[in-house]
Image (cartoon, rainbow, N blue to C red; front, side, top):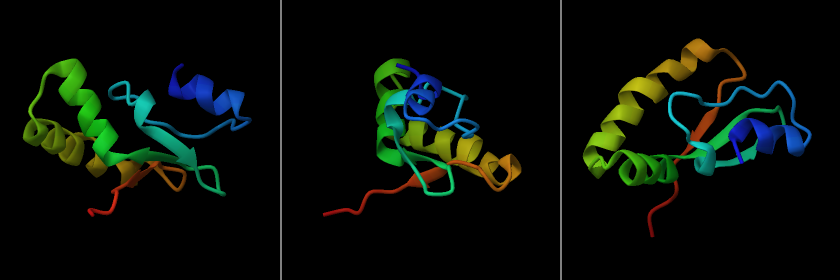
Length: 86
């Protein structure tokens, strides 16, 4: 199921979601003000699994090409969650 389908099925219309790559599995929730939330580690894992990139290459891609673009997406831009290390 795509991110768009997940959001619409859950009743969230008009939520801005990431489309650079298919980070559908990394979409983990929506905030109260309808901002998509993505898990950074799951985004990296997706690039590693589907594009056969190293962890470092995937992290660099996300940091440079995705996270840097978030401010240009406006107030409803997605949020990237960084899990706490144990």
